[in-house]
Image 1: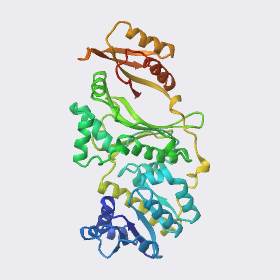
Image 2 (image 1 turned 90 degrees about the vertical axis):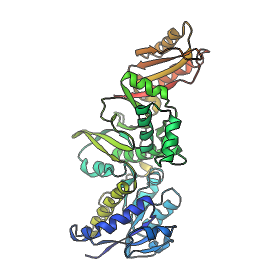
Image 3 (image 1 turned 180 degrees about the horizontal axis):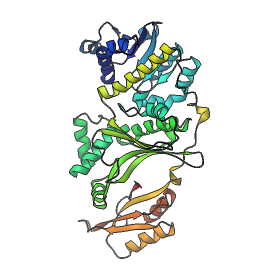
Length: 432
């Protein structure tokens, strides 16, 4: 069989892991899998990384064009990140009829239609397993293992930074800012953590998963994303007292009217919920298929070798496709702007809610709160008033029965006009 040659762009953390796997498992790929695949070129702007990695006989350089102009290379692995140079790498490689493997979630979520159209036009493929869930085989499970199912719902904890912060807050009673600073010091959070703690990173992954599940294109910018910055120590304590924990969840649900409910926000989960025990930097994806029922994937969602593992699974898949003469074995031509799928507006979702008010401790406040909820036809499951704070305000917690987001927002908007409201009201959705 003719040698299948690959080029790697980006030999940083994940790229370095890919180089290590090629060095360690290359013989296995050739003999046991009968795939004569070889990493022949590595490109990175930092020449020093070549000395730290087992590059073997791969030709190392700093110019991507060295890979692009090499017509013997049929697979390009893009691991530089971002959506500018990375996009150029991917599109240039596809237009030179080279297969592309990427771990770039932002690139796929924001520019997927253009990328997959280029792949289709050139008769090659794009694989992106590592873009969602790191080492967990989420995309492969949906596209292949669960292909006989309609995926009814997905609930996922898929950002390790947020899960680490919330776990520490829950386990040790720490404040958000304190845990964030420590997470940054230990390398669990970026110097600029906005994309993680603001929900954008999870949003990128939800956009990709929901598009695959729905068989169309769901734009990232239309997904409702709410991060964890407003989750306070008080919310954690209240959740514990009520038998809940708080997690940042990506949620995807198929609706009855051919729209998709896709969103990202903190949720309260009962402590006995299967996702409640997913702690620290670990991730999990809870899928429900119409035939198989619930399926849980659990593991490390990031890191050098975990993510490199997912990249290598794509390398092997593409090599097998090339060897069998079916380079487009899993088509993605539905992922295009002309096949955009409508997303259910967040105002239209229904569910249970946790609402925390900070109000003046004075007569008539509780009756006004309940009256405003009644006006919006919101049924209250429980109401708790905690002891007075030093500033003579009190915390009032209301748990609702199932209600619409629109009604909750309307009630709170009316309540917050009152003089007795001392701080912005906190709302966290409850998932059963």
